[in-house]
Amino acid sequence: MIPIKDDNPTELTPYVTLALITVNVLVFIYQLSLGPRGNQALVLRMGIIPYEFTHAVDIPPYASHPLVFNLFAAMFMHGGILHLLGNMLYLWIFGNNVEDAMGHIRFIIFYLLTGVMASAVHIVLMPNATMPMIGASGAISGVLGAYFVLYPWARVHTLIILIFFVTVIQVPAMVILGFWFVFQLLSVFSKSNVAWFAHIGGFLSGMALVRFFLRRKFRFHGSVFRKA
Image (cartoon, rainbow, N blue to C red):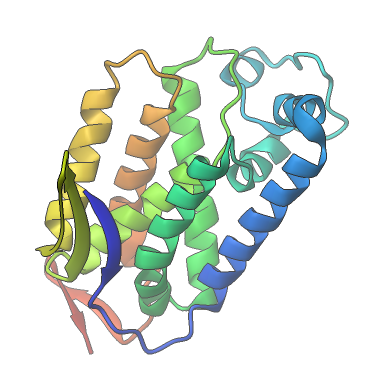
C-alpha cells in the first residue's frame, strides 16, 4: 500500500513542508558529493549512535560539535535514494495538511520536537546500539500521528500492487496510517537495521502533542477535531 495523494484541501501554502523537502534533497546531494568514504565518515560523525548518548562517549571519527547537535542534523540525512524518496513522499502528502492546521512556525517546532522525541525513544530502547541512525522518518512519523488524529476520514489515493495486479483505490487515512503503524510494530521483531522504535515513538508523540500546536481556528471539541 503506497499513498499517492489525499483529497484534503488546505488554506495555507505549505512553505515549511516545501522547505523541509528542499533541505533534505540538498543534504542528500551533498552526501553523494562526498563519495562513499566521505559519506560514511559524515554519517558516523552526524548520525545518532545510542551508545554515545547513553555512555557519554564519542566513538571515532570524533565530532567537533556537541553531541546534542546530532539529534537535529541526523533527521536531514538519508541512507539512499529510496530512503529519501519514501520519506519525502509521505512528508508531501501528509505534511501540508498538518502545517495548515498548525501554521508555519508551530509546524516546524512540532516537526523538530517529534523528531527528537522519536530519536529519544530509539536511544532509550536500544541503549547499546553502535550503528548510526539517520533519516527524517522519526519526524515524519510525528506528522503521520498528527494527521491520524486530525483527519482520520480524509480520503487517500493508495497504490495497491499484488504480483501482476496493480490498481489505485481510495481509503480513509485512518486505514492507511493504521496499517503503517501496525507494520512498524510487527517489524520490531525483524532483524533489519531500520530504527522501528523511532517510527513508533514519533507517531505516538505526534498523536499526543498535536492538540497543543493547532491554530485558533483549528480546535478539538471533546475528542473530535473541528475547524472553527
